[in-house]
Each structure stands twice: as structure tokens, then as C-alpha cells.
Amino acid sequence: MCESDKVKKKRCDFGFMPSGDPASDRMISYHDLRWCKPEHRDGELYAMLVLEGMQAGVSWSLILKKEDDFRRAFDGFDPNVVATYGKVKVEELMSDKSIIRNKRKIEATISNAKAFLKVQEEFGTFDKFIWSFTDGNVVDHHLAEAKDMPAKDGLSEKVSAELKRRGFKFVGPTIIYSYLQGIGVINDHCEYCDFR
Image (cartoon, rainbow, N blue to C red; front, side):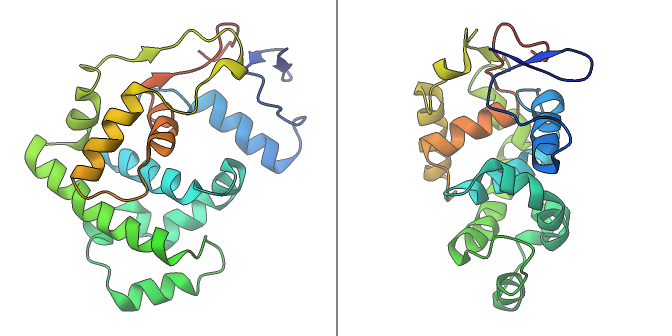
């Protein structure tokens, strides 16, 4: 079962509400334009890592609703800046009602920025590192239906383990599976989806 928009395009059946609802429109836009599309800009690779970590325990719809606020609060997700945050900045972020105020997640964003910069130093770019797990190739699961999508797989477990070894936080296999979809390493658009 597929949902159609105004131009009758088919998209993965994730239970999108009709267009016109702001939350639904954000989800539709994310699905159509960003999800499972290969991303190679280091800034966006870090941004998605932050957003996926923030999503743990809450809905992706809420993350998208707050994405602009996150980008503002975390200095455009510039890892060079975020890596310098100290206690004063953490307290400032904890008092910002426009973002998710979870101290462990905020502190993980800072430690992940530091780990991210170390990966850049070693590999030249984070892009080279993260795409090396698939030799630069997109993993396409050719899903027949959205219900066939796994929560994690061998690749996400391998990437998760390596990120943890390098000091990253909030990077369990399920979060990393979603991250790999978000940056296009994994393409889980259904076979019938016009946005594959």
C-alpha cells in the first residue's frame, strides 16, 4: 500500500498523514529528498550523527520539527566548534527549551565532535571513513514492503562497534542502522517507491 502526493508519486508506506499537516510535510520532505540519498559532506555526516543520537527514545518526527533549533543551538553542527564546548555551554543548552534537553545526549554530542575530528585527522575526511565500510557502495536491500526493513544488520553492528571503539556515544547498532539510511549508505526505499 502506497501513499500518493499531489502529483501521484508513490512512496514507502510509513503511515504518512495527508499533506498539509506540518509534521507530515516534514516527514514527506525528508523521505523524498534526504532519506537514503548518498551524503558525502562531512558537516552533514556529523549533523546526522547528532540528530540520530538525539532521536534515541523519541520520534523522528520530533527531531525533524526541532532540526532548525538544533542547528542554531549547536552552532550549525560544526564539529570544530562543538568540540570546544565546556560546562557553561552545556548549561546553556540544558536551559534551551527548543531542543531536547538530555544532558547525556548533549555531552555525547560534544565527545562525538572530538571523536569525529580524530577520524578526520586519520582519514582526511569522515566521509572516507564511513563509506569505507561498503567500499563506497550503497547497500540496497530491495525491500518489497516497509515492514521488511530490519532495525539493525551486520553492517550497522560492525560500524557501531568501530565507532564505540573510537569513543563515540549513542551509536548502538539500531541508531547506526538509521544513521546509515539517513546518509544513504543503506537504501531502504521500497521497490515500488518513486523516490528510490
